[in-house]
Image (tube, rainbow, N blue to C red):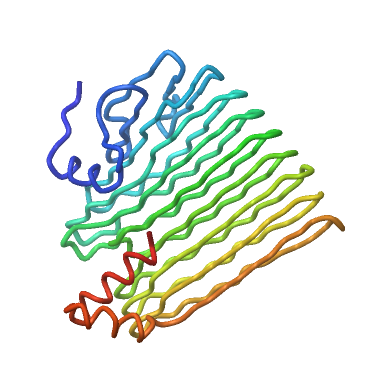
Amino acid sequence: MAEIDQVTQSILEKIDDAGFGKEGAYNLRYNGYSLCHGNTKNITIKRKEDGKGMEVHISGETKGEQVHIPVVVATSGITDEVYNDFYIEDGADVTIVAGCGIHNSGCNDSRHDGIHTFHVGRGANVRYEEKHYGEGEGTGARILNPKTKIILAEEAVFTLDSVQIEGVDSTKRETEVILGAGSKLFVMEKLMTHDEQVAVSDMEVRMEGEESSAQIISRSVAKGKSVQKFHPKAIGCAPCHAHIQCDSIIMDNAQVCSIPEIDAKHIDAAIIHEAAIGRINNEQMIKLNTFGLDDEAAEAVIIENFLN
């Protein structure tokens, strides 16, 4: 059984709230290869022959189980591209805990591109938690470019909880979702950028089945000279419901661009979008100051509550 070094363990503690352990169904990808993995009776992880990913098979007997599939890049100059396919059978109930952390102490860029495809069966309930994090004293960039495709069968439910904590210099997220009849999508995207970091998120949600629904909420904080761009798009091809909400706090000399888009292709497609960008509320600052917090501490409290 492979040992986990101190740097990797520290990163795992930041990107896996539930706690990564070598038990149950799990796979730890480290510097471009699978360091260790395990299966359960209901969940099987198969490594692809080319080494560039895995297949995760989740049976319909799965009820309340978790799968942990973190990625750690700890060597400067690595470009790691991985293709993961998830097959979730009808009626399964599972939480998939993912996330990627990059530790870059060198002068070359380190990059991870995770391409994930989810095939979700009828009536299945899937929660996908993903955290991105970067660290290291090197001058090389920490780059993360996730691509996610989700295909929901009838009555399936998928919750996507995506968080970018800190330290990621550049990220471009591409998400595509196709909803079948009666299926439901819940998205919560949280993001913080600082210095000269750049973050782009493009999302297309197609509601093709009758009475399908989607709720997309994005919250972000932009500091320093960082740049953020959000482009969520909801397409209603049948009687359906969708709500998009993008809220951002802008600070210093940052830039935030929010472009929620709705496209109704059916008379009974009901889609709503909202977007708000603004600075920290002065009244909130003053109130916290009266409780003895200085401006820096007050800002931290406001941001933490906004993102939680």
